[in-house]
Structure formats: structure tokens, C-alpha cells
Amino acid sequence: MRWRAGAIAALCLCGPASAMTITSSDFKDGAALPTAHIYPRCGGLNVSPELTWSGAPQGTGELILTVIDVSVKPNGWSHWIVVNLPTAMTSLAHGLKTLPSPAEPVASNFGDKFYDGPCPPPGTGTHRYEFTIWAIPRNAMVPIQPDMAANDLLKMLAGAASAHATIAATVTAK
Image (tube, rainbow, N blue to C red; front, side, top):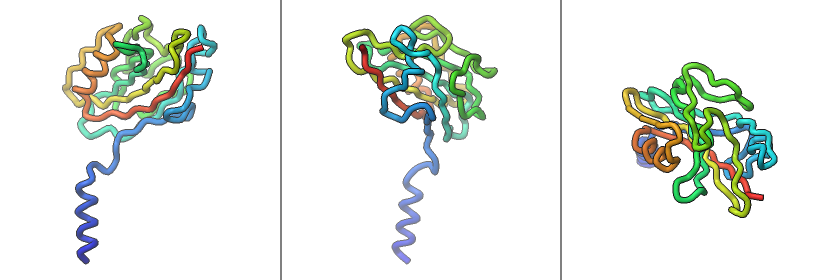
């Protein structure tokens, strides 16, 4: 009987029943990003990958998606920023051309308001690209500016988000 009580207490201390997650049917976490999702100048097709997420905590007012090359020093480099994703939304389709309302793009470090696939400069080795979904609490103010430095964006979101989940992929410069 003591073991059961201890086991139940341990279960109660382990945190929320479900943590926020993000996955993709197009690539595995930590693996090389398939060519279809790479920028054309680097031999790809610039197709956005399918992304699916779950586990946003109660009290989330919106979701924000970022795709950041965290290997670019010193500031990182944003490839895609999407704000105002409704909390009921749980995925973005492969090859998405138009965001569903009320989601809105914000200009990335490329200056574009759409998915720009990875294209690391020649000779810079392997770059890590983080696809992150951020749960922003209701009434939180997150003043994302177009072409904002990626590391500043990440710091701001980390301070404002109640939860987040990341899946990463790599691309090696040619």
C-alpha cells in the first residue's frame, strides 16, 4: 500500500499531463532537412514543411511560429515568422501558400512575409534550423517588428511564452 501512495505522489509532482510538442511528417528532429524545403539558390524548391503541434496550455491566447537559423552568429537569422495562429489550430500544411485567417506573416530577416528555406552561405559548415511554436498567454503583448534580429525575437518570445516546443533540422553549406 505504501508503494502505491508513493507512486501516486510521484505522478502528481511530475508536472502537467501533456507538454507542448511539435513534429513534422517531412523531417525528423535533428535530421538533415530534405531538399524540397531548401531555398532555390541552394538547390531546393522552397516548399514549407508540414508542421503539427499540440499541448498548448490553458490560457493561451495565440500561437506564434518561428523558423530561425541559430547557427548564424551573433544574431541568428529568421526564415519565417507567423503570428496570430489561433489556439484551435494544430498544424500548417506541406507547401502552404496562404496562411489561414487570422494568422499573419511578419517580415523575416530576408524581408519576406513567407517561408524562405535554408541556404547557408558557402563554407559555413552545418547550420541548425529551429522550427518553434510559442504559446502566448491571453493579453500578453509581443511587439514583433519586421526584420527584427532573430536572437532579440527569441529572447522576447522566451520571456512572454507560457510554453513552447521546437523541432530542429540541419543543412550543410555547399
